[in-house]
Image (tube, rainbow, N blue to C red; front, top):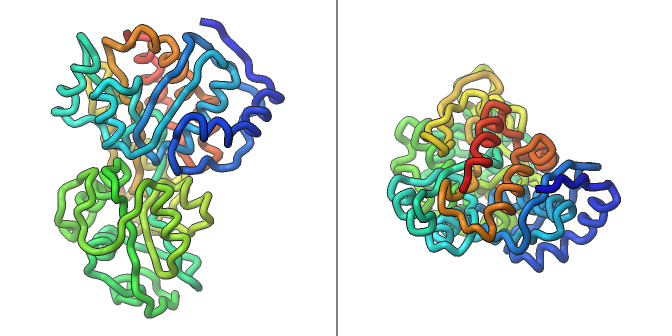
Length: 369
């Protein structure tokens, strides 16, 4: 394994070439944000050829940054990431089509069992890699700050609250004039880890207002659907009186406002990376062995803790990885979980993982075989 330091000149060149890279690597319709990449990063290169990944669209902006920086340092490896949603990524991993899958929800027991066919002598494990928050992004003229809570969000997305001046919304927003505009909600059409995390929050925190179990597949009544995080963001941006859920970076890149969440704390929590970090600080590892699936506290009432958070996992084989891609996979993941890798995605709305979690991931990566 060789260590390469990316110069500022090469990183700027990588930024200029980003559109070409995206079209060549098939990362789907989710556009990468315009950012300034780090002025330099030390990356240990290894392996060669094409490294394939697929899945979560919530992490697509993060992967675009990572692969551009990594490719500038390690030109012998071409990282290709296709979106399609967490469900599609997990299925491609199980079928042995990709070296890693991005998923905003950890593997279920039956999925772990199914990964054995792609991981001879082992199985898939969840490595937390990109942390973020789910924005309730809205398009409502004249309303610069909106507060919602879990019961109200549940009823909006289940078709029970249909107007912006509904008493339940008005009560959460004293002093704000809410228009008598109909609400148009947008949800994901594809199986999505973002949906799984939002519905996990609603199921845990809505006191029964959300009647469905957490799931990657949307179960609410009413509303319209769109494909991927970018699709939902595009619809909310276009339709007045609309609301949708998406990873924060997509709300930011589309100039959308995000609702604050009333949790029972003295003040509602704004949708900021710092407030999401407060929630992540209370997370614990629920997985065993090399699996580092996290348990998130969706019902937190800590002051300043934004509760609707998600972690995107890179799903890889603990054993049985293909020899042709193993070295490149380990090198790429080592960069993404490094301090420079986490700081790079922090510039576009993601939340750097707590060091306690990052250290655990850094310890597992060398053991992959």
